[in-house]
Image (cartoon, rainbow, N blue to C red; front, side, top):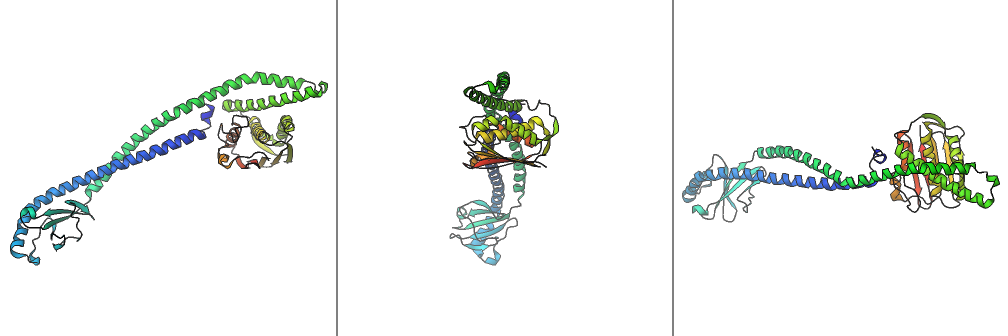
Length: 394
């Protein structure tokens, strides 16, 4: 598994996948809803067709009785009843003459329809030579067709949903493949870069440290300091890249580490960079603060927080470092982070300010180590005011 994949989906990949899943999910729901609606309408049409056939057959035996009643009796009390259906007789003006229906509101625009769990068939009597009358048949809908339709819809809907989910999974793999290939290519580049950087960086730092600064003229000493600053910057980046690529293969040795001593050591490591930018460092540090952690990983946390506090600070700015039992805070008064970026600064390859160098991996490494040791990270930042990052532990 690559180092990038090991850290989870990065923001761009997550955003792409989320957008696709939302769009695909909405389309899938709409398709299933459309198919379900069409099947419901089809089942309803089948039910009404069955009732139509039965009612029309019944009307063949009922209409002669009704015709005889219209021609000879017309006594409302002797209006012929039908054994199978409830009946009603309406006039040409759609006003009921005789009705035993559960409703008086009939939709004469439909020949047969379902309303309030009752099926209504409208039979014009003019073809039977009985004038502008309408015979209405009514029967109760038992709803069995709806239950069967629902069951079949759920079964086939579930099958289609599984099929669509499978298709969606394959499509998401195809959509993310170019991004995965690009990330894998970037990982390979980082691996090759770290391999090539190791020897020259070590040689430069070793030779700088071996120089006798007292024997050098001020102009040469100033140049040597610049070389030292650049070399240590590259060395810090090299350490981050090495950890990023090889962190799963590195031997972990957790010890009760004195964070005060480590902090002083790392401040000395960044001393030339701090002096170059004329940054004032304010310390509020307790003498004995320990944490059970691997030394390399603790160094990566402190180095990245210090490096960012220096890098994103302004000339003649200030860095405030607080170290007390259970908390380490590093605060600067630099350029700050936009509100829209605060939630993303721990994502890999994300930089709040792209005008400043770097790969955008430092805070991601901090977040990875913090997660591993159950450390809590809080960040407070405001543009042109500064940034404060705290690491807390129990």
